[in-house]
Amino acid sequence: MKAQDLVLNQFGQNPLTLGPQLGSSVKEQVNLGAHIWGIDKNASLYEQYFVTFNKYLVSKPDQIISIHPVFNLERAGESRFSNQTIGIGLSTAMPLFHSGKIKHSLGAGLQPSIVRQAIDERDLRWPSQIGPGGFEPNEPGEMVSKVVYLDITAGLNYKIEFDSQHVMVGYKMGHINRAKISTLNPQNSYRQERSHTLYALAQINISQKLSLKPRMLYHKIGVQNNWTTGFDISTPIGKKIVLTAGGGKMKNGIFVNAGMEIGKWQWLVLREKYDGNLYDGWEFALNYKI
Image (cartoon, rainbow, N blue to C red; front, side):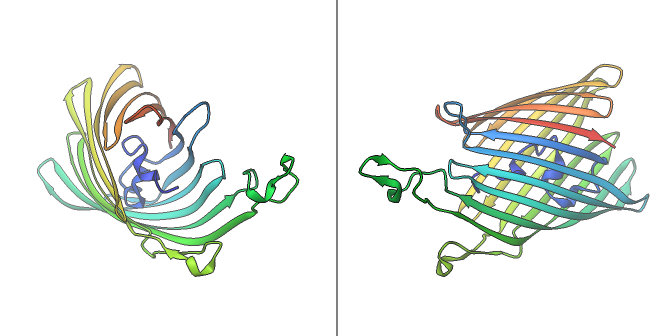
């Protein structure tokens, strides 16, 4: 379940997924997304669906405060491993200083979440269900195990703006409270590892009709780590219509993406290809700017 992390998906197009610290540094919007990974013979090894909503509570020249509810559903494997997360993030952004036309600001955020983990193994075949006549589905298999816990995330974001361009660098720590996770055997319970994410995002205007959006991200949890780097190119093709296309390299593969912005709506499709022939994935995102 932890092989993929929400923060690794759509971090350029849906910056709210990078953590609550960006809630006051991006436009108010609603994000809808789906991520399907590990497609093999019409079966998916991992699925993720998320909805985030960002709304300013205070909007002043010297401070912005926003609220950021989020719902996330993950599930993986034939035994129906699943995570359901409901959280509410709060963030603030405030100017640090101006240097001519260059503006500097700092953002910070905190997000407590309730997480429900469940494992449903009733559809699997177990030795107790194998009899003299073969598989006997009426015999009981394993039942559902589930645990609910509190998860806390926080982060900081530094932003430089100049002539409708910007550069952002930031840090997010996940699982701050290191929740204790129970297993079927209470003696084998464990505590989560804290996760660490570093990122850099930018928008550079090459011309009046061409923008370059490079991005880099590094994510680590326990002994596992991952990184992504790439860029998008955006150009307007009509009134309130913008086309975007790009791609990049991941630690274990490559990705390409394309999308379109029409008025307040933005959609994006991302295609992943991992090293080897087994694992690949699709991602779909839809944003609405409030």
